[in-house]
Every structure is written in C-alpha cells, then in structure tokens.
Image 1 (cartoon, rainbow, N blue to C red):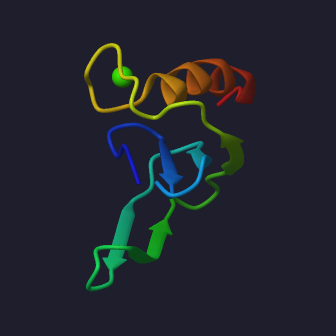
Image 2: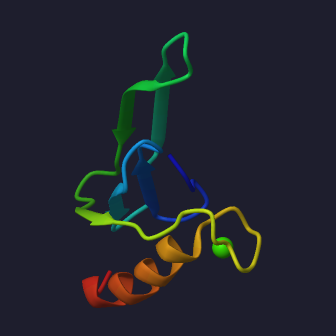
Length: 90
Ligand SMILES: [Ca+2]
C-alpha cells in the first residue's frame, strides 16, 4: 500500500507484477489497516465522505524499483496517475 498524501492508493503484492489503484474523488476521512503477524495486510477499511466516488484500476508493472525523484513512489505509478487522474475530471 502506498501514498496517503494524495487522493489515491496503490496496492501491490511484491510476488506478482499486478498493481491495483484506487483513486478517490475526495480524500477519505478514515483509513484503517490491519496486518497479520507476518506484516501482510489482511484488512483495509476506507471511509469516504458522502457522495465521494472511487475509480478502481489494475495494471501490470514493469519495475517498481525505479524511482527517479526518490520520493518513494515508483516512476511507473507516477507516470500512470499523471495520465489517468486528469481524465477522470474530478
Ligand atoms: Ca517517484
């Protein structure tokens, strides 16, 4: 799980190349995350303001280790979000 400073979350399993994106029309009001004893997330609860919309997408990444600006967000995710968020019109 990555990024809580913006209106999106990216979820990925390091054993696969699949990344799921949740993009919110408004920032969620509450985020609850629970992990098991192996630190694997087994529950994620997101509470949104009334009327908020969510866009869910899934992609296959090339390489999550490439982070040109060293902000912790892989280039693959930043490039994708910069393309898709303006198209949502939120
Ligand atoms: Ca980055």
